[in-house]
Image 1 (tube, rainbow, N blue to C red):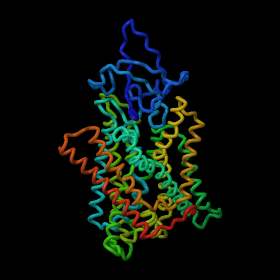
Image 2: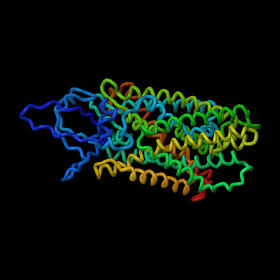
Image 3: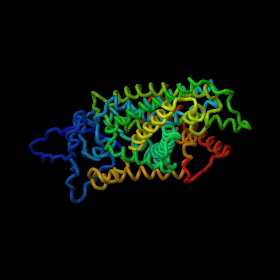
Image 4: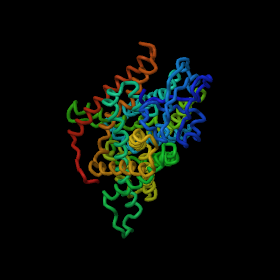
Length: 523
């Protein structure tokens, strides 16, 4: 049962004729972890196979009747053969299970709002006022619904299984082959691709901050663009040495606060400064009807890209303890509701105020952040401009940590499976530095990646809006042809079709408008 987690309680005492149960070894961090007081469900997928000579740190196989389970059901109370697996107890995502609703809100907000929101007014230039607001509202409600599905799919009261990673749930639902074909690339791109984009945006913001603070008063030679990339990456790698997902809760809180701050600062400054002269709200029309349709679809891709973060919801929920009386879905959904209330308070004003202030003049590359410095760089307080840039830098550094955590988890799992012991600190340092500087190399090599918001939105849309609906139908098995069955099949199929259209449209727009492919020439 790969990618699944099953809870385990001490075995029921056997009769005197039975052989005594061998002692169970587990990592000291788990023996004293608050997670075990709420019986976390330990993974039985990717089992650590015992070697011919059992290592000291391995967990022996045990045969135990499990009449009591954390998420009990009549089926699971039957006699079963099981194994206590310490694998997840040694990995960054599931190493600590003492999370709560507040931690969930911090992580969800940090991953759910970011620099991609600043290009929302660009989508409005093709959709116009009415369709822009309608589309943004529908997308927000749709992704909130699929978040609800994922939170409730994380654990099953019937089987007692927990899925601590998005790809694990995909494997269990669709099978490993289909999951690799349809889910692996979008999920990897949402992790590694987002980290690359954050390096690009963070480095550019570092340069803006330096120019704003120093201006013409500094005699120091400013770093080159590539050096700014390296400075930001080094700071991100240093911060990434925190051991697990729960340990970066404070980092996510700071990232969430700064994300709210720069979103609010940008739209408030834009409104206070007033509309630009000659602003127009007429939707941009292409030369032909086909081009116009593709432009609209590309705009939908931009909106879809603004609602990333679903690939981290199961990972965030995995940091919480869970049992039959206190399932993790309760605090998790509470945290999600808090986070997405704040997300809505940022995204909607940013899109509406940005389009009101700049209309068709909004820059395609960089969106609201570029517009702020291009149109109001001279008549706005330098303190406010510097503060906005600083907030973008801090938020990008914080978001890098949570989006990089699945990659850290994957790399460390290779060592854990082979050595059957937790990764030593020096290996963890190497893994995370390697990931960070590989992202740096990619950012320098393809600095125009941030211009592909529509294409990225199309590629990752199924992860956000389609797959959760299919997984709900497969796992929960709602009544065939009932309202819930129709709703999820309709949303899932529509999401897949929309994804294909968005990818095609985005590629057409990129080819038609042209992109300056400046390889190894960071702007």
